[in-house]
Amino acid sequence: MAWWDQLTEFLYRSNPGKEPAPPSSPQNLMEAVRRVFITEAIDWLYFALSFFTQFYFWSIAFLFFSGRGGYYFISTKLLGAISEPYLGAVGIYVILKEIRKRKIARESRHYGEIYVWLWLILLLSSSSLVLLTKNFHFDTIMRLIITNSLASLVIYIAGKIHRP
Image (tube, rainbow, N blue to C red; front, side, top):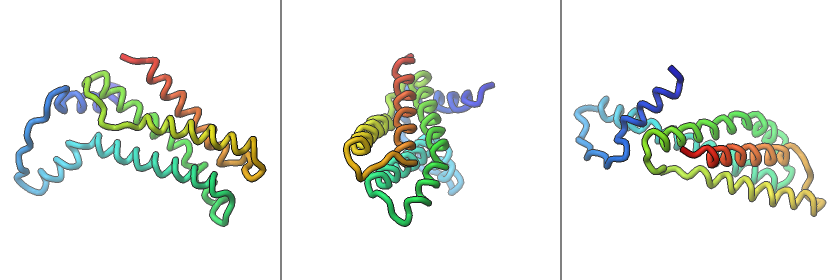
């Protein structure tokens, strides 16, 4: 049994293509906690991935455009260290979205594809600034921008090509 089978089964059982039944009020605290954290687990995961994605993207954009400062070298090492977990989070997002698309036929409520376009805009603008001005240089942040932009684009294109 593959690790994603449990996710697929959970998503399939959660009202595939139907309007959700009106919720009954929880009987006790444990039922309320279970409803919030377990029933909506996938949405919580999307929220966590969204927060991580936003933090990472805007941190890199800020560091590139703000230039060098006292925080620059420590921040670049930190962002370089979480670059691979970021791409892993993007991969998890794509897997969850594909499972939902294929097994449930439910329209997505999460629009993470916008970050593909934001990464491409950042790549084009930062590359232009590096090539055309003397204030910006090819450094660790520019390497991260190129790596993450191209990886996001490849993942997005692969998802579009391999449609159900």
